[in-house]
Amino acid sequence: MKIGIVGSGLVGSTAAYALVMRGIGREIVLVDKDTKRAQAEADDLFHAVPFAHSLEISAGDYPSLAGSRVVIIAAGANQQPGETRLQLLSRNATIFRQLVPLILEYAPTAILLVATNPVDVMTHLTARYAADHDLPSSHVIGSGTTLDTARFRALLGRFLGVDSPHVHAYVIGEHGDSEVLTWSLVTVGGLPLEDFCLRQNIILDEAKRNEIDTGVRRAAYRIIEGKGATYYGIGSALANIVNVILRDQRSILTVCTPMPDVAGVKDVTVALPHMIGGDGILATFPPTLNEEEQSKLNASAAIVRKAIDELG
Image (cartoon, rainbow, N blue to C red; front, side, top):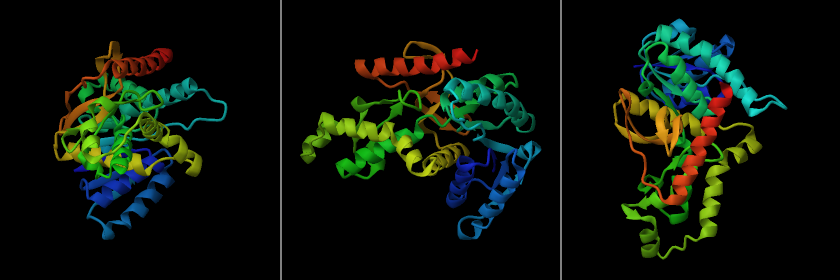
């Protein structure tokens, strides 16, 4: 199956590398306004194929996306010194208003997977632009808090001494500072978190919870401070979502897609547990939260809704 990637920067190219290493899909095409960069990335990735899985990798323009089952959108402007978040949003909105129709002109049935930040708002806008081309919102998916959820599980698993796939924990809401770690829903090996800690004589006090919360919520800031950008984690997350779609795995992931109501906030896009398969979003499972978490989710959704409103 064919996978398109629009935007060949660090995130787009790393997602392509993760796809190659896992043998996801059969063909990958990179599209970027910087055609030399796209070609260079395609060549470099193709040279990794003999060490991984047999895939065709090429660079092209929008017509090259024809036949793509999934198109990852990782294009967008970088924030400039002194530029406000709203100004950056406005510039990226302009970019997406142009590129989404171009993608759908040549790949009208593709599932669009948005990675560009702020991903919640950009996914909302993508769905709005795609609707003009009759693409249902269920075919527009943002990476949401899939990476944040992975961070939560990894840090909690490390503390508990448990392999992270056996830790079920979700981060929901905005992919950003207001995201909500759903501590009340955490289970480990099928046991509620408190029961597991009691059986293992583990003390998980408020200080340790705050440390893990900060580790998840501030992870991107620390990584960016140290190396300038994050791309391995999100690249792997994008590859995983593509794999779920292509294999129709019906996995439940904390992605984002437009919702009529989230915690009382109307017409907004933030991450929630969604079932994903070959037809995109198949079902949504709003979690049963405690009062504090519900209030935080409302506040998180309201932040995103305000950003959408400010864009007009």
